[in-house]
Image 1: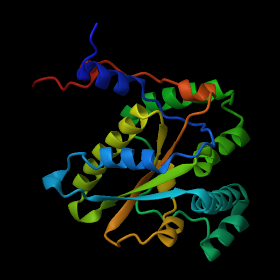
Image 2: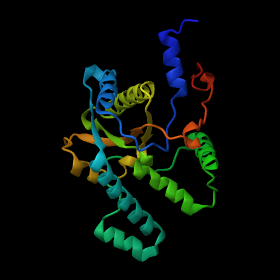
Image 3: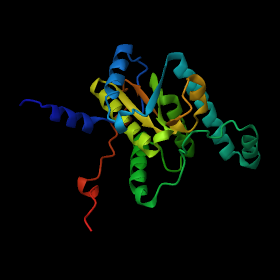
Image 4: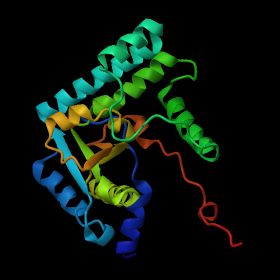
Length: 244
């Protein structure tokens, strides 16, 4: 049977997974360039391409990871350390989220069921119990270690187009992740990496009109079972809005 472009695209869409454990193997520069060139063809509002990408590998990647992990540790220590620890955090400000968008908020009630099912399934696969708060914190910290990925990308959206920049950034992100998957790489889009923007802005010359929306860890996936985690999707009928 002949494989069509539609078959190939459908397979890529349905087999892409968010990797949460990566091999340390570096991404060849020409391969990373290919993925970025593919993503560059994503459609956008009036072809404005209202997004920018900061890419870190090697020493810069390691430095950013160390800085973000330190901020995470400071924030967690203050959260669990009582009144004095919280006052200390407020006084020196280091550890307080300074991202352009809040990454910690209450999920709407109608979205909670899927969120909990996805998180519960993931933690069950990882062997982390509901009451094992230390293990949960450690798993959260893995976000700032980029799950061991050798390369991390930070995606910025132009604030001048408001929500439409964010929409276009999402289209760009999906294109990037599908190209990475087609080229044998794995990715994990991470809203957590937008919690602190200051280390990223210090490392790159980010134009002031661009806001950090998320990060993406990228590399070759390890053989860890977590990389096969598939929370599934609802059926298409649940997406469709009924007529009045």
